[in-house]
Structures are given as structure tokens and as C-alpha cells.
Length: 318
Image 1 (tube, rainbow, N blue to C red):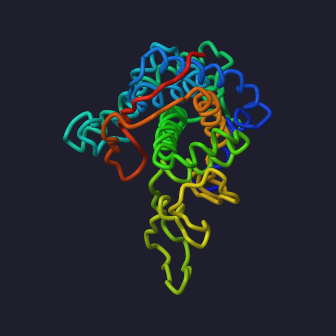
Image 2 (image 1 turned 180 degrees about the horizontal axis):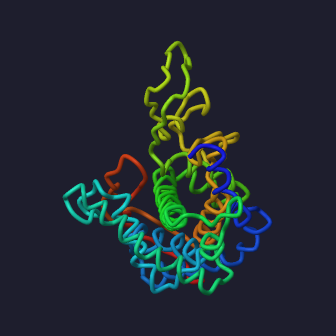
């Protein structure tokens, strides 16, 4: 979207993501983190970190903010995987590429009901804010309202889950950085941003040039398509010294995983808070961790990360 439509719609929920409001969630996030690290301890010494842990903590967070009941969480997870994993034989609903249309229709059916419910009986959740929002005195259209829910419910957890799983794998593949972070928890802020840079859960967006523009001797003509490659940008030698080294103390870290400018991710602070909460709980209790099988990445050209991360570990009781 372009201005002013983009900013008007963004402002509908912008207050929810202000630091003063997100700071109120710190205790909730710490509780979720303990819940899932406790789950690891209860499972013994082996789990699939993606399927058992990383997928579920961000899902619980964003859907509870949105106001969905926990009984809806498994369906939302399945639909999200089918939406972003349409090219992956393990996640796609059907081998027919047209199946993605049915996935989107299922989202719209579910969220149409949610919209009607919140308009009839508003509550204090984000779904009610969106359902009853007005711009210039006019309510949002059904397409705007339902699309708002789809974006929030999918991108609000899948990308964070990818960063969590990919972040743990990066620490496992760089044990010196794992030990560095465990021995110096003050590095958690920079470590989380390095995980997000490293994983780059959003792979690309496409844009259309609105005017001729020259970049390093190459002229992009008005009307031409432009690929924004986030993994490439996050490994740009000019922006990141030694970009192929995972460094939990990297600073500054001008990664592009949350986008840039007016389209900068509305939930960036929340994603960072979730990652910090999980690793603050996990690392002091993690006595040992190693691969228990081959990690697998989902097939995607848009959004995604690890789809399996089998690990063997020792986690102390909480």
C-alpha cells in the first residue's frame, strides 16, 4: 500500500505496539517462555525444537493479543503453514498451486465470523479494535478488516518462530558464541538482532520503480520490477563487516529483516521481546544440546525458516 491508505490502516493498531504498551507484556512473555522450556524438560532429552517449541510460543502470544480462543490455535497454525508453505510438499494442502486460493478463502470465512462477533460484542482485544475501526468516519471494508487479521495472525507468529529456531541452530553451529552469550547475558539484545539478521525469515518482496533511479552504475527504469532480497541485504559486506560470521555481540547491526522506512515491521519490538524472553529462560537451563537428526528448511521463496530441528539436550527443571 502507498500513502495515505497505508498510514491510515497502520495507525489503527499502532498504539498496541508502542513500547509503553508492549512493556506490559514482559511478564506474560516470561511466563510463556518458562512454560515451553518446562515442556522441554518434561519431554526428557529429545524434541523437535520447531514443531514442539518454536511454533507455539509466538502463536500463543499473537493470537492471545488478537483475542482468539486457544481452541482456534491449531487451525490457525495449519492455515499459516499452508499459506507460507505452498511450495513445500510437507506443508502444502495440495500439490495443485490453486489450493492456496482455498487456504485464503478459509482464512476469510473464519475472520468474517470474528469480525461480526466483535462488532456485535466488542471486547478489549485487538480484533475488536480492527473490527470497529473507522478512517475518516467510515468503517473499514470487509476486505481491509479480514486482511488485517490474516496478516496479524500469520506474519505475527511464523516469522518469530523461524527466528527462534534458526537462532538456536546458529548458536549450536557456533558453540563459541553460545558460550559467550551464556556467560554474558548482557549481550542478549545484540544476540537477538543477530539471530534475526542471520535467519532473515522474510526472503523477498517485489516492488515497481516509480521513477528512473541509478544504483551503483545500474539504472532501474520507471515501471521495472525490483527484487528486495533480504538474505542478500543482511549479508552485504558494506553494511556488515564479516557478514558470514555469526556474532552475538554485533553492533551496529543494520539488518533489514524488519524492512525499512514507512513499511518497517509494526511488530518488530514484540518479536525481539519474544526472542529475548525465550533465550533468557532457555540458555541458563540448557546444560547440553546437539542435533538428533538432520534439520530441514521449508521450501519457500517468500516467508519461512526451519520446518524441523531435532535436538538432543539436557535442560534443568524450572
